[in-house]
Figure 1 (cartoon, helix red, strand yellow):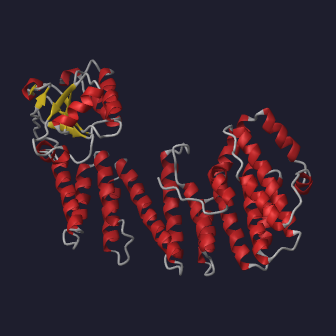
Figure 2 (cartoon, rainbow, N blue to C red; figure 1 turned 90 degrees about the vertical axis):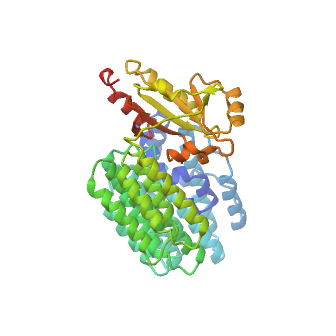
Figure 3 (cartoon, rainbow, N blue to C red; figure 1 turned 90 degrees about the horizontal axis):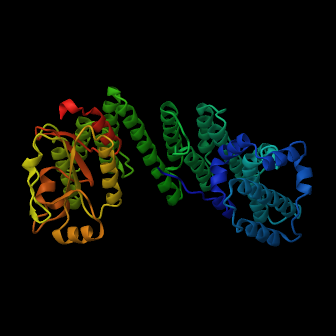
Amino acid sequence: MYRSRCCCSIACLLLTPFIGCGQRYVATQSAESSSADAELNDSITPQSSATLLAKIEIPDGTPDELFAYIASLDEQELSSDAAEQSEMIRERMAKRVKACNAILAQNPAPEAETSAVQLKLDALRTLSIVDPDGIGADFQTYATSLVNGNDPYLARLAMAKQFQHTVNNYISQGTVETSTILEELNTLVANKEAGPRVFMEARDAIGWLVPNDEDQLDTDQLTSRMALVAKCYRAIGNGFSNYVDSQVADEAKGLLALADQFDLELLRARARTGEAAAVNQLYEKLELMFAAEKKHGNELGFAIQTAQGLEFDGLLKPALRIYELAWKNVESDHDANLRSHVQRTHERATTRLGLVGQPMEISGTANGTAFDWTSYSGKHVLVCFWESWVVGWHDEIKNIQASVAEHANKPIEIVTVNLDSPELLKEYLDKHQLDITVVSVADSSRSGTECSTAIRYGVDMLPFCVLVGPDGNVQRIHVFGAHLIEALQQLSPASL
């Protein structure tokens, strides 16, 4: 999944995990209630931020010297221990706040003043995550004072930071409605004076919303989050796609593409659950993307990606329909290479998706002799097409063997079909001993997915695993991982 990069200060780059996800981290630490953290929280809760800052020691110096001091703080390596990391960040950000106060107290030049305010605002927002009851409690007060102040740039920046704060609360506490996030974001990007900094702050905040493996969201929460991300990326993209700075405008258009991608993923997730309407909506969404007057350039890639996803989900007819849509939209394109590539993709998919119910026959050599496919008649056979360059293939075939072994009461044979040249296959087998049938099918002049066997069965993505029934006809395609387990569970001794 896409993660937007942080474009703030050096410290923001170092502290992205805490700025973006810190409240979730703090909540976890609070639940664990380690004695050290409890002692720290007890010590800071009743004290004002002024009292806490008074205990922080920083060197005296000119604004330039203090800026250099702040930069040196950000260069210090963080501990790998989560609890120590949190405390180090609290201390670092507190020192930054105090250093910024010292700079501002010297009535520095306007540029230095703006930089100090920005750094202080960044630090307070980080502290509002890792130290909400201490110095971080001043974040909203300080941000509001900037919003109501006389500097329009700092006012917009403060609003952007407040928006990030809202997003963090949504992620960590679940106390914020999605409508609140959308309202704040729309207000932020609707400001005609909003510039690159606001764009980056808003973009980064939405990047934190992108679901990841650590979020532990149920299906409803996941779909809700994906829908929110799509709406937010679209709001930012629409707000900045015509911006005077071409780099910002291009990135904004990229966010519009991401919004489309999330919409498609969401519809695909719904289709995967059996929602028939979602399949039609997927197709209609892609049709609109291809027909749009202003395109972001990712329409074709998204269409093929969606078709492949549906294919792996077992939704073969909807997948083929989208492959056909992709080809339809490029068959008259002036780019001959593009036409050739998509035509090949479409033709292979058409063949591959039509395999179910059709006979399969493998011919080639195994251990230097002619392979006898007829010896597998009357058995279930898992046929796996592969090449030696496929990353993780050795582990994958071991996993397949282990899965089959766990269902020993449902006998099934495994035949691997290698598409490498004989020389490459020999080199691979000399290094990796495989206790499994390996059939070499490469032609003398063509190997890989360009060999006749690969073309005959539409092989275009590797590894490609097919379940062949006792009658010799294909029963399922893309049979690996969870799909293999499901297929094995559905087999019964009576059907063998």
